[in-house]
Length: 136
Figure 1 (cartoon, helix red, strand yellow):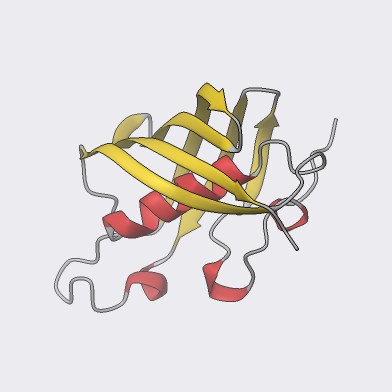
Figure 2 (tube, helix red, strand yellow):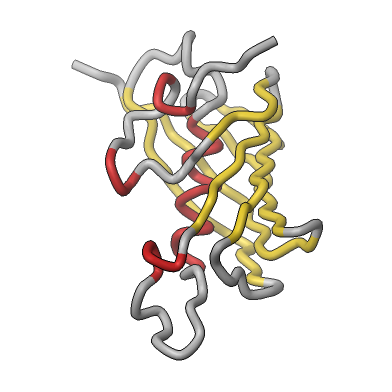
């Protein structure tokens, strides 16, 4: 079965669209892939390019957005990030596998655990809170 491109599930475009492909989309879990190039992180740092942690968090947040895209009513936002741990640097070029699993849902809020791995090594973990804001 072929999965749709990430752009069909998230509003991000251009350089802010970090997901390259979806690997798995289930009712409570999403797995996506993001590729990072040296050009994307130019200047961070000049002598040793490293993917900024904030880009890893944004990629996890975009992965969370891929849940329930078809049935979603409202505009999705990242409402919170907790328990963030950067466990290893990501040196481009790199392919990062992003896994987000729902922990709980309460009304318009979704609580999920995110994990980013590169070459089988966990590089980032976080607890994410997503919110749906009613669209007028």
